[in-house]
Image (cartoon, rainbow over all chains, first blue to last red; front, side, top):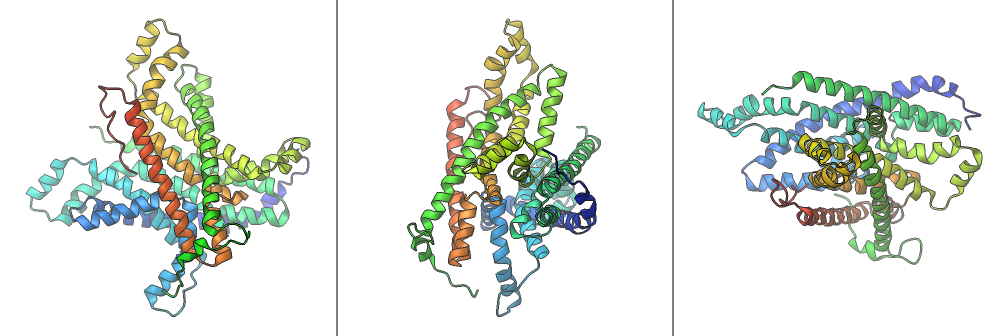
Length: 230
Length: 249
């Protein structure tokens, strides 16, 4: 028990873990969050629109993604993205895409379904009178949304969006299943190469724990600061 | 798309020689459900206990409960799986470690325990929120009637709190079913893993994943409807929102 533990392996692999692994994880988290919020907001607008077909299609997409496990979605896109690339570019064979791009597309489209539900709640939290007032002022639909509804909806939902980002940060570890070198992937590669599973997985757990805990405390403080007193 | 679709693949014999690919997927679905249901029992029991002690008047119990929840919520599920499966047998005394490693179906037991404890932290959050959403008068009334604190929880607070949190609990139940797919990383052949191995042997990627997706959707629909029925069943007349069907997910 703890007799032949070699903590030195962590020190030796720190540059690889953080410059290769953690950079991938952070980049993926931030870019997928940004993309997911944009697409999620568009999906939310589509779901709430009066155009019958549009809201049904958006609703079906969101429900489909939300009823599938992330691992399965990762596999789906891992094999599907080359075909989508072929279809977009009109190439003769499925296009090889890098691990990062494949993971980015997957997480953006997956998280969009979850961000859609958050933004939908945010938009619905804005009172009907605001939209009516905007209409009375002669604003067009894009103006009503961009100038009146979305800024407030966004502000109301910032804590929830950030909490979802922390969930996403933890979920990116699942790219392990397609052998991508994110933070956990890097730790796992060293663990298997040096036979140091205990040290590396414990260290990975500590790093994820510290970052997630610090981030969720920051969100909590922010929530108090930006809360609108009504 | 240059892809050869062949839906007949489901009825062809898989490499094990006795079962079709469809049966392979259904076995996977059974493992998924078995893992999720057993883990759900653990999650509900421990989650309720932790949720309750976080609302208790004993400061060190509250801190203990908070620490428990923070621990399980801030480490990715996949890392927790690895901790249970790879790390635990190495850090316990050698005899126990060897016994753990030689266990039949070790990945199943590991997945159940890991998923159960992971979800228990989430259940604890809901239980706490449910209890706190009740008016403080309910607790005071119970105590004033001469109930002990445990009795107040058992007969007054928890019956209402559980009814209030039934909708979020049903989404946690859907989550536990989906999260059981993470157990494929420690070698459990649940539904996603079954689809993956079907894809590897048959080379029919998209049929395999479509099959798994359809099964997940069917499970989802059954659970959502079952939970709606349960909500109507246990609704207390006269409370707002009770008896209204839960919003679809």
